[in-house]
Amino acid sequence: MHTFGMKKLGRIATFVSLGFMASFCAVSAQAAEEDPWEGFNRVVFRFNDTLDRYTLKPLAKGYQKVTPAPLEDGIGNFFRNVGDVVVLSNNLLQGKVHDAGVDTSRILFNTTFGLLGFVDVATRMGLQRNDEDFGQTLGVWGLGNGPYVVLPLLGPSTVRDAVGRVPDTYLQPYPYMQHVPSRNTLMGVDVVDTRASLLAAERMVTGDRYIFIRNAYLQSREFRMRDGQVEDDF
Image (cartoon, rainbow, N blue to C red):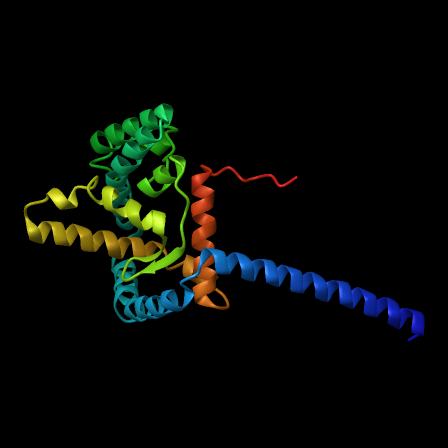
């Protein structure tokens, strides 16, 4: 190869290397800012991952194997209908009156015509499900995310989202159910059904599982905070 070509190739390689280094530094700086407790988080992540691998994931696979797809869809619809009460409450707290009206209509139609929510008739009527929680409400009120944190048993979160879990819990029916076996059964089925719904998405996880899940969680939360609106950088 001619000397000129070698020099040109060298300059290109240098620019590419500098670009990668700059990107790596930017990502590393952002990760350090968002995840200052990474050492602790990784310990909890390994605990959760081990527990999931040997208990919850096998249960979810077994549940999916023995449950007919239409019934599994119906169970998922039922729990989403229960969750719509949380969505409605947070839309009201955020001042989103129109969305709260949609939530109310969804709950009424799905609970009555949809057999307690097992059939999602509201979506078929054009009433699309919203996705709100108290963590997002705190964000709308001006509270920042805070550091990323992995909660024992509960998984990825941020300080703000962890705080938001508390009031959302009391907007669900479980704390008010006096019959303990029924309450525990419902909560157990809810957890297993949710885990089963994530089995297919799990195949997308590549590389460092901790980093992949952390980044996916933070991006997902940002997307939800913007109500699905993608920020235009141009």
